[in-house]
Image (tube, one colour):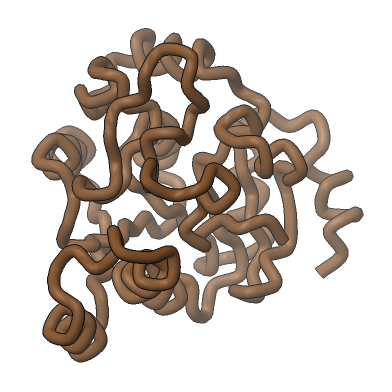
Amino acid sequence: MDLTRLKAELKGKDILSSLDFLTERFNGKVVFSTSFGWEDQVLTHIIFKNNLPINVFTLETGRLFPETYYVWNRTLEIYNKPIHAYYPNGELLEGMVSKKGPSSFYESVENRKECCYIRKIEPLKRALEGNLCWITGIRAEQSANRHDMDNLEWDEGNQIIKYHPIFDWSLSDVKSFIKEHHIVYNTLHDKGFPSIGCAPCTRAVREGEDFRAGRWWWEDQSKKECGLHAAQ
């Protein structure tokens, strides 16, 4: 795929027009991953309200916050559209927990990455398999390494095109859109959680801390990606 040409074809299009274009170009092969955070709820709203032929999925790690499950349920009720859940491979998960216990991710970076792989990376690969374009809610200001990304890129690890429709949005833009369209969102965002993942690995961010300081807070700042959106 010629990304340069595709970028040129997307240039000047608004979000809805861009998504329409991509669904026509990659007919039946466009997916959107949601973790039910602010950004993902914005895109879910746009996709579902406009009946876009984009398959929406989520990674059910088994360790999500109750507030996340609430948003998931309310989203299904409001839009009456399916959100496909991908679960960890049972054999891999049982093996890890049986050998190392339910909280091995606190013990080392290697253990944490193993847990992320089993609960997120491997299910993601299954979710993306056979598709050509992956839509995400990534924004540039979310972490330092994401400034080096582009709104359209090639994901070598998953062999798929990634498109980030709200890449250049500020957090204020996201909040304004949610308020304007009365979109249900995770109330943990109001309690100092800008980035929400698995419950054991996420805490509130203190004033002045980095956006992702609440994710895997016991680790060095440079290791704050799980691998879902690692820099290419």
